[in-house]
Image (cartoon, rainbow, N blue to C red):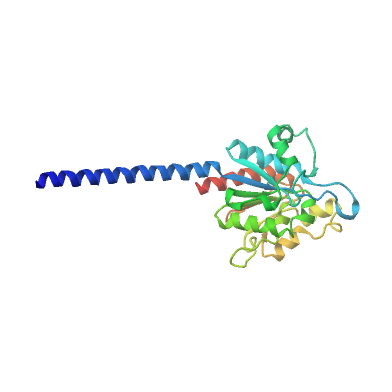
Amino acid sequence: MNKIIKTIITGIIIAMLGAILVRNQAVGQIKQSGKMNKKILFVVTSHDKKGSTGEPTGFYLSEVSHPWEILKNAGYEIEFVSPKGGKAPVDGFDLNDEVNKTFWEDEKYHNKIEHTFTPAQINPNDYIAIHYAGGHGAVWDLADNTELAKIAAKIYENGGIVSAVCHGPAGLVNIRLNNGKYLVDGKKVNGFTNEEEVAVKLDKIVPFLLENKLIERGAIFEKSGLWQEHAVADQRLVTGQNPQSAKKVGAMILTELQKLK
């Protein structure tokens, strides 16, 4: 009788352990699947004029295309959002750049940049990273966009990556975290420098000098010479100085994403 009871109990224990093992494998697969399906949100400007000059502007094409190429090839899905949604104005339109050409002629992604989401359509929990592309328009309409700032803060506080290049860091200057501090406070950051703004003769036109504003917010601002490649990563925040830094920013975003796995 005791042997029968022991056999029954042993069978029950084995069955329970088997069920637990199957459940753990399923949970692991779900988590892995969730990681694989995570998307990256690219922010582009809706602003199309350089202030009082009347000159056209928009998002700078290579500051989208170069990070896009690296991240897409690594298996990430890219979505686009802009303050107004819809078709995003473009600047730096150079199809002699092979990466720009590849992006612009990609039917799927060309459609996405022509039909960007509005901030209200975005669920930040769907994204593992957010990237702010530059172009002078960003200085006019990204800094004070509270909806985008909240999206970026949520992605960051979920453990994700925030990145920006050239004038894209304009979108970072008013992002506050739950602790009340600015996102950039105490972090190494760079972006379009005062010297570069003077060189393109827009230092008196832009609503603020990006370098100065980032420093005001507590950032540890790094920079190189005019048009030199410079990018930095600090505590899941990746920033680059200018269009020449866009590819490096993309590579650094990928490195930071790989640390999350």
